[in-house]
Length: 157
Figure 1 (cartoon, helix red, strand yellow):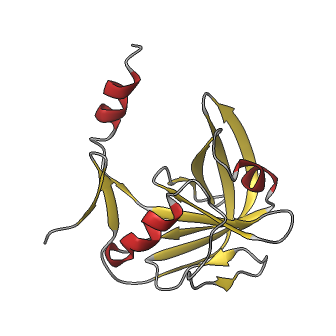
Figure 2 (figure 1 turned 30 degrees about the vertical axis):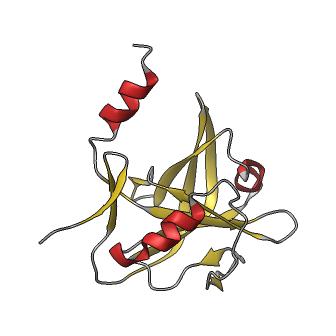
C-alpha cells in the first residue's frame, strides 16, 4: 500500500488522547511538542513511549534530552495543543509552566503528568520512537482532550 493519505485517514479512526511532550534543549531553553502517539509500554520497569517526526524542528532537543515530561491534556486545554502543534516547538511565550526536578517544563492543570528519563530511542521509518522510564507521575480528575479523524474532540457524556 503506497497511498499515505488514505493510510493516515484510516489510522485517524483510532481515537487517542492528546499530550504535550516537553524538555529543555542543550542551551536550557524549554521545548514542547503536541503528540498523540503516547502509550504505556511496561509497568515493571515503568516505561512509556511517544513518537517524534524526523522533520521536527525540535528533533535534536528531544534526541539529546536525558529527561522529558509527558503532559496529558484535558478537554479545556485545546489552546495548548494548538500552540505546541506549530512548527516552532520552542515557543513558550504566554505559556505557564513549572520546572520538573530535571528542569523539563511541567504544564499546569493537566489530567496527568509523567516525568521521564530517556530509556531508549528507536529509529523507525520517518519517526523516532522515544521510550522513557517514568520517574514521577501525578493525575487529576477531568475529561481528556481527544484526537479523532484529524480533529480535536471531547467526550460527550
